Length: 412
Ligand code: C2E
Ligand code: CA
Ligand code: CA
Image (cartoon, rainbow, N blue to C red):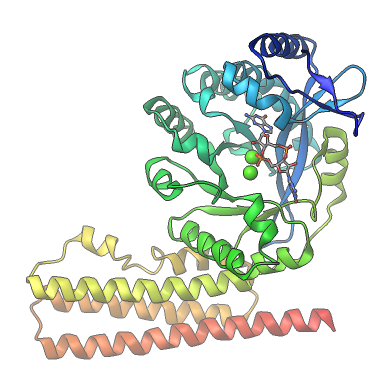
């Protein structure tokens, strides 16, 4: 049986291939379609919830047949994957992707286009080699794209997958774990594979406005990703309320019907050129920074106690591990990174000052420890550290108040 049209939606074709014979016919049809150039990418916008601006798009594969109907990935990717033909598609689509990205670049610079790769694409070096050829010929920049790999693919991670992902990372290509939260043991895959960002699963995100538990799962996943230093993209953002909830939870990017549906390239070029904006906000980030600070302090005090108990000397490596410099800790990263957006506020400058003083104090405690200071001297310094910490938290709250005041003014 060949891939046939769905009755209820004539413009949308489905591909049920149940018997081996049907599968062979369907595969042949797919091969011919690829030859004829019937596969194209639609683009779904992604926005930065921090700046409220378009940050890129996800390229989603579509089979546009000559009769004008469209077959969606759910109806042909499973067969393409099980037969291994997917790598032919992924690799042969790369020049097309590079052309699309070039057209997008001409309209608006600095956007990042992500595309989906299957675990099968990483079983041999072919796909990564084809991508690198595009880089080497100057047709595509490594910073212009991101590769998305589904969680289940990552879970089935074979040594070849890890090797190919590391090759990608070697050229600074961003790699996202797709559908995070939809499977099991994904936390394990996070530590084994070199991801740079996490895409929260569509389903959980869509349910978060109706279910408190789902909202908490999303919040915990955002925190987990943040702790591991990943960017977080929430998929399936279908309403303004979900957008705000995610923003308040410290999520950095959003994708979903509320922002824009997947659209053909021409439509996406117009969308990108229009320069639409969405609500910007860093309140969730300030909350994350506060938690970062509390965790940093806890980690530092735990280490101090351990070293004192074991009578160990602290090395430069230990100091780095304790993120002793203000620029190294996660709060510092935020301050010098996305937090810069707040540099117009006097509260932001004040936070920088109290944060630097806190780290000076921490460094001083470590010196005391190495100089065999008495327990009483160390206890006094720890008290001083706590006072600095209270100032940092108060300062973060002042920043939060200032942002809230500005937001409330804007909604008057
Ligand atoms: P995905 O990577 O998780 O892509 C997101 C899917 O969610 C897309 O479905 C998109 O249209 C849909 N979506 C986006 N925002 C919303 C929303 O707000 N609400 C709802 N209900 N859905 C939303 P699509 O295009 O049908 O793709 C389905 C899957 O097919 C993709 O899931 C991906 O796993 C796979 N796929 C798509 N393109 C490719 C490709 O080029 N290569 C491979 N290997 N897989 C692909
Ligand atoms: Ca994806
Ligand atoms: Ca996904």
